[in-house]
Amino acid sequence: MPERTRLGHYARLIRLHRPIGTVLLAWPMLWALWVAGNGAPDPGLLAVFLTGAFLMRSAGCAINDYFDRGLDRHVARTRDRPLASGAIPVAEALAVIGILLVLAATLAILCLNRAALLLTPAALLLVVIYPLMKRITRVPQLFLGIAFSWPVLMVFAAVREQLPLTAWLLFAAGVCWTVAYDTEYAMADRTDDRRLGIGSTALLLGHRDRLAVAILHIICLALLAAVGTTLGPLFPLGLVGAAGSAIWQQYLLRDRAPRSCIRAFTNNGWFGLWVFLGVLAG
Image (cartoon, rainbow, N blue to C red):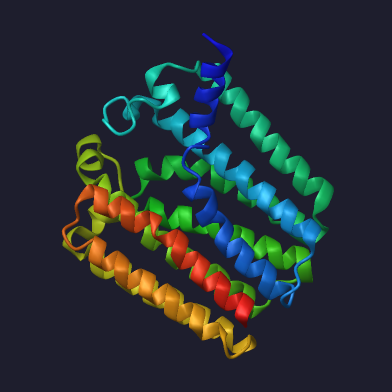
């Protein structure tokens, strides 16, 4: 197999061609860095956490494909993934996963303080077990929300060496937001998930899925508004923009067409940006 083709398969394994996942993971982390750093985050910590976001999301995608390689062969959208199609041997995929996790752990050990290091094992564990949750629970999106929001706590631990109420408010906002957008993603896969016996909030909620997404967005915005009491008067402008993004997503979800559900999911990149701009303005 030509080297360029093999590298291309590795890139697809860690989703280099779909950076939206890394973007969504990074936004709550960036909110936390600016809030915890009082508007002036340490450049070194910023680089560490952004690098960590890329490594952990890449590892998470590869782990997901490892566990789902048998299921992915039966879904049109995923059957061409490197492990499902056999383009990459399982042993090589496991090696990639190991390297990514070791790099992430090494980065944490070398660059983070003791308070943040105490939270690192849980972050690694969440990345490993999340792909299994769809097999043993009907709400795997909740576990993804915890995994994607955990860096918020690590940021506050790294910057302030404590977890104040603001950290927990941002963490809870991140969980609600993640469950909302991953439910949108699951809405696109509802037919295949039902056929394969995979759990998801989209299947659990049924026709209440759009309402649940709206409620989760509202709760997220309310929690962010609570955080905003410690910021400047311009912060709410960011929340207005984020609310507009949430409303647009409801429009996209109106007929629950899979392609429109994916568009709603990716639109959350703008939701996160609006909140970040509000934090900057505040």
